[in-house]
Amino acid sequence: SHTSDEVWELLNRPGAPSAQLADFPAARPNRFPGVIERWEAVHRCRDLVNLSVEAARAQRQDLGAPGSSSASVEAESAQKQIRNPIEACVTLFADGETAATLGALGDHLAAVLKVSHVMVRTGIEPGAAVRVTVAPAEGVKCARCWLVRMDTGADPAAKDLCARCARAVAEWTERSPR
Image (cartoon, rainbow, N blue to C red):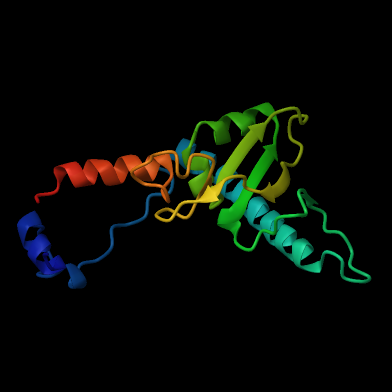
């Protein structure tokens, strides 16, 4: 492994003699306005998802408690409790533009929202707030990535891994020296 100073030397940057003594580059927030605008929408949605998942967790903990009030989140499947956001399946109802922005992230949207599954649906009038529903994710927790996935155990050589992790481990095993 290399220290940051060894890398700094190889970069041959003028100015500071060390990475620790160098100034951070100046921020240029207007350099990519479209990207910033797009990610602001994603971050707003992530904040809504975080609040909704937390409300679903609290609602699950209060299920059956005398005098408990229901949260503003539509929580489904009371048999299974959400203890951690990664155990959640989230459905987002958004207007067409917001749905397109979120959908452009594809499979990465679940990682950004820190949940196991996410579905994006349209049908809300333009400009309306995104609506979030939370339910326990269906499937089995992968021992490597901890996501709750329907394909966990599908590979006979890796019974406790989801298909994605099983492929990654198999590729790494093939490339690593024996």
